[in-house]
Length: 106
Image (cartoon, rainbow, N blue to C red; front, side, top):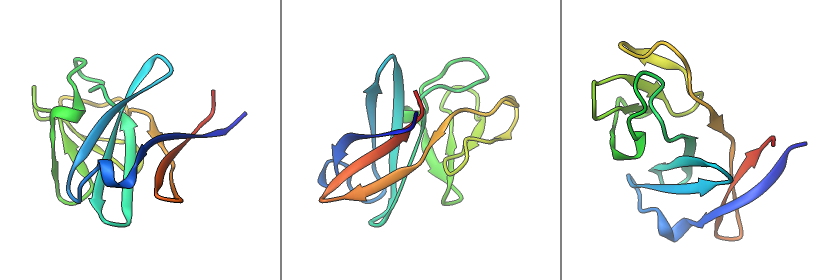
């Protein structure tokens, strides 16, 4: 069953910034690409477990793993650049009453 979980206030994540939050037993990296565009993905590179929250955003919607340069689409979790080829989980983001909420299906 899907549920909406508040993970931050919008003011917690500056434009162009990111925040790593704990969601149950998983870390999630939440990115504010623009003032109205927030995205959230599992905070782990599927190649070797690097923290994507420590990576940088390139080409507007790609996060680059700081360890070996793998890239993932923060909108879908799809692996885009080797050495990663397995996707990561992406979470729909809802902005409501100044908060940032993720839809989780756990």
